[in-house]
Length: 388
Ligand SMILES: *Cc1c(COP(=O)(O)O)cnc(C)c1O
Image (spheres, rainbow, N blue to C red):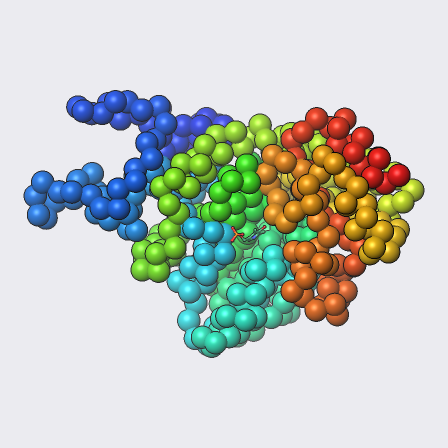
């Protein structure tokens, strides 16, 4: 049986963790947590099982890298100590002084910070564009543009861009297309199949899924990019630890079940909010009112579990609403089984200037929700009581 030809959940559960029946093995049904930092050899110039030193390769991390590649339908997978570490590794591995990055104007704040506050010191420049319109991406490409960075849907505005259309533009020019697939996860979206060269995740979110482990992941079909990124992973050393690899492996096994429930709950919450008199607008790609609802259906098999909405209120009233909630927790991050709610203007996106925030559409009362997998009746009742 070739696991690559199996269905999503078969791969999520089994890939990378085929029991070992060799002499002396116990046939563990889950990969053991290999804590060893180094691996002994019987002969000086022969590695045991291909392992040398854990920064270079570790059996538990390898199981996760193989599982990740399998669920992204990719040839190669690599995991890092955080999503941000994965991003910096990809950027440093694939770019050099003089290169220009073109990014979606509504990227994760930490990603923007790498572009605006770190890479310029190394002579790598950037600009941002509204990638919901592929023709604007085409116009913004410069002779020195080496890489286009998309996130779709975006955070916190849930903007969706046409991955196929942007890939057609980058392919023609030999520009690398990176897609941050954190929000939909490989259960709902496969950017590599839509033309992306590299797909990236903060596995802290849906892949881990339980708000108990940080991590980052990269998948690609390009052997040259893989070798370069893998070389940086080993050289810079921001690898995922064996224990964190184990937690992430464990999380991925239930990804399909969780994503279905996140989405079901998110759609119900979005519909409830959309008809509530105190709500100004709701942003969720699963709603017919979302400007890229139809596009979403052509490139993803689902809409995910994150939504944003705006209250007809002052900032003080929006804060009071959040503080009245009992089931939802006020917290940054997303993608865990718990429902989390936050105010981007004062929490996740506080590092942006007010002018920047307003220009991109992040108003002071915009609220972002990561809808968890709790009973939907309890989530709706909690929102009702807090809205008053
Ligand atoms: C959280 C997040 C990141 C950064 O990942 P960390 O694991 O927090 O370093 C990158 N992109 C997106 C879309 C995220 O939500």
